[in-house]
Image (cartoon, rainbow, N blue to C red):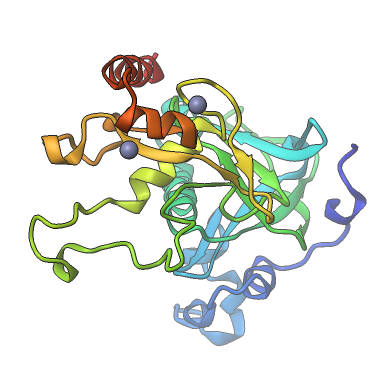
Length: 279
Ligand SMILES: [Zn+2]
Ligand SMILES: [Zn+2]
C-alpha cells in the first residue's frame, strides 16, 4: 500500500488550527507578549512536536517522508531515547522529551493519538553546516494512530488506524474496567494494587504474542489483541508491581502458571523471559 493521498500534505495549515481541530484546548496560546492577534505563533507552543489534552487526546507531528508501509499498515518507527543520545543538546531536546512523555501518556491512558503529517521544503544548510528542515505543507490525518509496540530498547512503532488500545488484558475486559482498585478504596491487605501503566507497558512490549508460548493472543471485536498480565513472583509473595515482574501471556498459560502441575517450571521460564527482554 502506498502512502494514501489523504495524508499527503498539500497546503500549509497552521499548527494552531490543526491542534485545535484534534481536540486540544488552545486557549492558553494567546497568553504571551504579542497577544491574541498572534496566538498561532506563540513560541511556547508552535514549535512543539507534541500536544496533549489530558484524558482526551495526544497529537504528534510526524514527517511524511518518514512514514513507512509495513504489512499493509502505515507506520512510523521512532526511537526517541536513541535520538536523544545522538543529539544531547539544543532546542530539540526538550521538544523530543515532551513527545516521549506524550506518547507514554497516550499508552498509559489509552488515549487516541492524532497525527499532523508534515512535508519539508528541500533541506537548507545553515552557516554552521547543519542541515535544517522546515515545514512546507502539513495536514491533520483524519484517522487516529496508536502505539503498537513499545519500548524494551526504546524503540516504538506508531501505526495508523490501529485501535486506541491495540493490546488489552483481563483488567480491560471486566465489566467495570475503569474500577481498577486503588489503595484507599479497599481494606488494607485484601486487594493488591496494580498500576495500569505497568500492565500497559508490558502489553506494548509483548506486541500481542504470549511471552511464554509465542502464540498470538485472540482478537476482540474492535481489533484489540487479548493477553493476560501476570506477576511472575506473586504480589502475595512480595513480588513487585513493576515491568520487571510482569509478563503478558495467553489465558491458557496463565491458568497453568497459577494452577498447573508445572507451575514451578513456568515461573522459572518466565523469569528467564524477563531477563532476556533487556538484551
Ligand atoms: Zn501462551
Ligand atoms: Zn497471574
